[in-house]
Length: 225
Image (tube, rainbow, N blue to C red; front, side, top):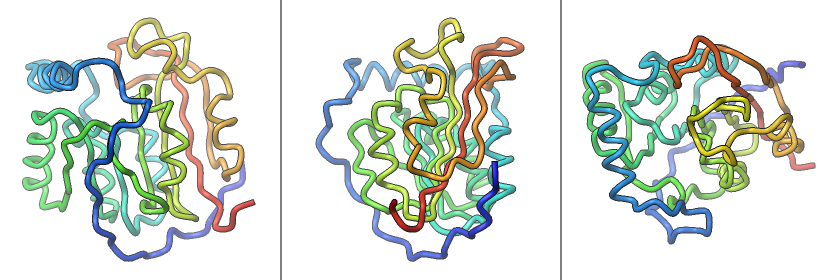
């Protein structure tokens, strides 16, 4: 697909909003139980996931000038949020796990990077309107119901980067959260899709050589259609 070479504009930092009341997409699992479950994941001696920055996000950033504000959803230990910060974004990471956030802050301090962390339920957080120059959703399939909200939170000319599992992946996130064929193309049909892949590729989670992975880089038009 044709690469849109327009640069992300330099825009002023806006105050981060407080969490809003949970919308209908809030997940049924008790928040404290969810927090403790993810704390155990990030406290494990042998991580169940790739601790290096996501390769697709890294490739996307090579095509984008890193200016403005970036938001990393379900940040975990901060592997991708720190990548965004290194690329020049004023970066915020959201996660429910206090353990993950603590490790992310420590890694940012060690690297000399600025990183704002927010402990929040991603389904209840107020993302605002046209507030972010880039939003990354890397291996957090449950965010699928809030994709319309995330679209509205990206500034005109801004980007969204998504990588997650497709339905041929056995186990992992809930089956109804996996991206079916062309689903992301449908959701972002009113945006400029700069890259889309759907196939069997190495995955950051799952412990398998390859898995059914879907990824997308899309840019919000500067003028709505």
